Length: 146
Figure 1: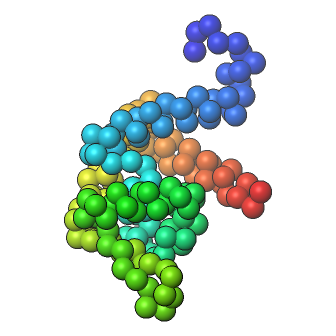
Figure 2: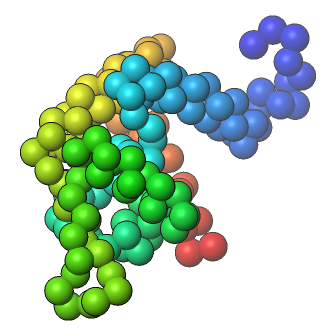
Figure 3: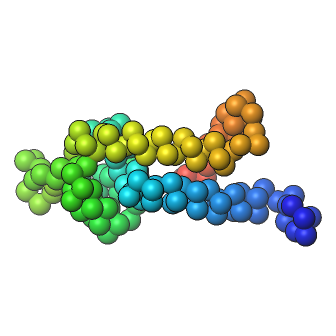
């Protein structure tokens, strides 16, 4: 880290911000290669793990703004990765569910994201990666109520 003031490189907040910018670029480029976006991955992952959900539930689970969920679900429906059907229990609500093609796309995106992790964390050993992930999760969990 030549030519960067030491006051910055000793601040975890600065380091995390710089790494986040780099990680976002790598993820965006990786997903673009699959014709996808980060919101797509979040939604497909939530549907795979939790099953069919309303768009509002997806927004909360994926931490995506409501209007962005609608746009992403529209794109995923067009691509055949999800189905959107009326919720029989709520006339004004739709249920979104993962299709077989969507599960395949999620697997492709998982592989791309695994490659991004390797590119991003290349300088770390497997144990250091697990430790970093655990510590970042702890820090984030400590601020989720905020």
